[in-house]
Image (tube, rainbow over all chains, first blue to last red):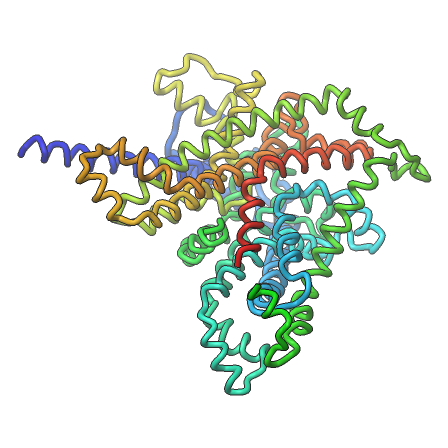
Length: 292
Length: 301
């Protein structure tokens, strides 16, 4: 009897240890980035192991948000003009790409599920199969196309490239959402004389809200973290997002790790908020998107 | 037979075909203009010599492809990419499976743990790479300081001095981001296993290891296949982490970095196109499992 209890206690302890290990692995680097962003520059360049700074400083954040700041005794221009612009660019491109993608996917996926038209299944297969194409395979012709259309370094250009990149996943997800809705609801609406589009907007979309939120989340997070596309298509601050700006905080002779970590912490605030408040939609979306 | 019948039968409203086409028109326009036509252009132009600095584009046939085979930079980038694939896919699968099994057992604080698990996947890869780059810093990084404090290391180690170590460290950063996806896919598969199968196995006297081998593994097989091909495709496309952590460094550059450098830094457009076509083919071959599954699902219904 006591051996059995011992075994159970050991199991419990093992499980708790595994949970702690997982938390350490997932959150450790984020914690470390936060600590770094609050540590004075002189303490950063030390080989002593400090798990919490001896003195807290807002100096790195002041460089991001202030007009000027003190760096190593000298007053310097802060990076607020670039930083705020890049933050705005990230927000605008990611939000717009999300809205356009979800709107197109909401209607398109419905047609793939409920309507019959020539080439329907082939079209769906081709669109979904493009998920297997690496971004750079289409980037070079896209670059020439965008130059020809004068869309380099414009919101429109970047947003539509994002839409083309993230639409297949949203379509795939919304299709599985619609497939799970019993058709009898829609048939009842047709019998009452409601039009197809009216039925979709008034009956099907409200039922699909969790799926729409999941598709929006996946698109937003993907767009927010994009780096390869804006590296090519957003050369100036007109559209340059945070992901391209932050690595530029490296100067020829000095890597400002405090500043980079502070900027990184600001850049991960939106994704963290989304995970905290909308995680269940995200998880169900990923599970559905994985082909379950 | 029934599908044919349905197609021939005039529909109640009679215009779902047109309406359907109207609904998918934006999909056709966007995917056609920004993915399909550029893809064809890439394949086509890879047989020519396209240079934005020179007029005209002479036909060179397989010239770009043969010079790719002879280029030591390209060969190195392929070899780096294959090592990345091996490192990241094995890390993501082993730790992802462990995390999925753990989450499947934990009852207390499960949604919190799930949020913590998935967080790295949600963050911008560039920020991840910056944060990990600071952790790996040879003089002041917490990895060196921590290992020295624990007595594992005697002196500071420069992690990016040695090729295989550097590839491994970059793989760790990539796996940190992508492991949650594998874990979620496997968790979905685990949750679909009926409980009574385990009961039956227990009654037959199977221990935990035997149960895992005889019940769990076969039943999460398709989930595992999807997770494996997903992580392989993402490993083939690795760019952000390697670029931020070590730039164009010869020892760590991936095929995607090589394409970027050929096309947008050296302006050898068609050379980059040919390489990107090869990268796409490699990526498609290894992700065939995933695509085939999609195809099967769209056909049988």
